[in-house]
Picture 1: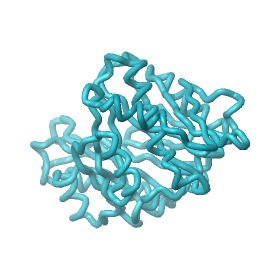
Picture 2 (picture 1 turned 180 degrees about the horizontal axis):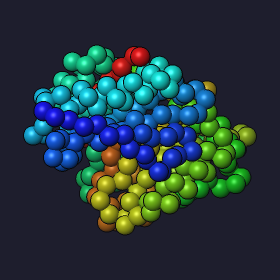
Picture 3 (picture 1 turned 30 degrees about the horizontal axis):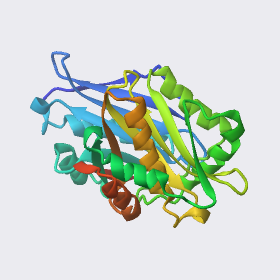
Length: 293
């Protein structure tokens, strides 16, 4: 088929990345596919690009995806990127396409859902009320309070050794400005960020945290963001304690909320056990593929 690839400009350049786009159209100028390439700019991720590619179902197997991929990959190479990551549902057309085009499967993600109406409130109360000697729970909505900002930023290194299998995501350096910027980004799009943290009572530092983003309407599905415990505080069941409190607060603060969603690396058996014990049920599986340039 006759095909034209047009490079577009994304005006919404972020603080930590920039995004490029391509539009594929046929001989009649009808759009048949798109590709978006996110180029990360933070130290520790300057080697990385992330690809999102869609082709209209009626136009698949006509070379549209390949042309769009070629354009994005060429740009990533010219920008000195080392790898391109892409995610797709297991068994989907994208799964087969990426495997055929030289990507290798580097990570399996399991998506799960907890319907709040099905949550075991008795078990949640038992978990959140169980003493954890030397620790206490704190929580906040929106931006972290000033008195906790420094230790909260420092606690983000709890995510550095999160199982990512062979995916080359690099490392992200967190500081107070970055954690505040994330909270502001959530607020600016109209959503609500809820954070529960475990504090080391001996010195007031944060030992671990879990985050939940709730739609601004307080209805529909909320999405878990990061959950992590610093290595020196692991083995004390803090992760389950914090997540159970997050669920309890979601039920109390947002009675019209339907469900909580989360995704976990298949190899992250510890977090998967926590989610299973709290009643999260599997919904689907995705794969992350990586193209090494």
